[in-house]
Length: 110
Length: 114
Image 1 (cartoon, rainbow over the protein chains, first blue to last red):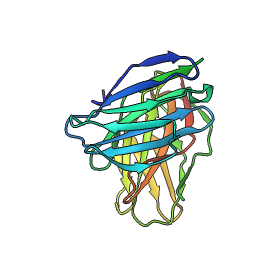
Image 2 (image 1 turned 180 degrees about the vertical axis):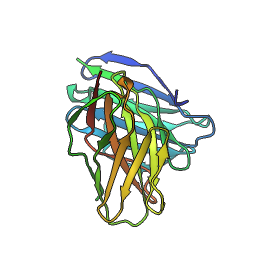
Image 3 (image 1 turned 180 degrees about the horizontal axis):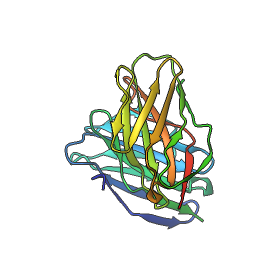
Image 4 (image 1 turned 60 degrees about the vertical axis):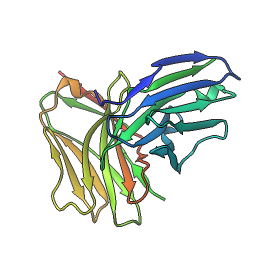
């Protein structure tokens, strides 16, 4: 158990809908990262937050947004969902070097 | 841009044998970190081992060791005395200094045969 929690574990929704994925980092970690894992793109970095502020942005679509709250949990919002958004979404939080991943949320868009 | 290459899509190894998973990386930065993660069929990403670019000794964590050859830009993972539970996807990743994101390779699927 990495200490990073993610909910829900699975999510099935229809095209055009909006979903919110939630992540709680390990106790004491200020940074939260979001990654997307899909069959065609592999593991890709989406966005990082540090202590409530956006720190780095990767290949995140404009339809996606994220935020980190004062209690350090983070949410990833995905809107106008398309079939191609089906993927495993990971949240990670970091120690000095290592990033510890949560169990992931498997999103299926039908 | 940073890039990680894992040239072995799949590997099959007998139980109790040692196995080496290859990873080469490309970066012009002098300060960076290299990581290996394990992803079993259940899907979670498990951190295995870390090597800093300035570390003089190869990193070891239990049965895992990282064979770091800086001049060749390689960071191979060595698993000694493989076990059935080692069957999984293995990802090599890199992070350059100042950039927090991890860049991942495509992964190697390791299967341990009894």
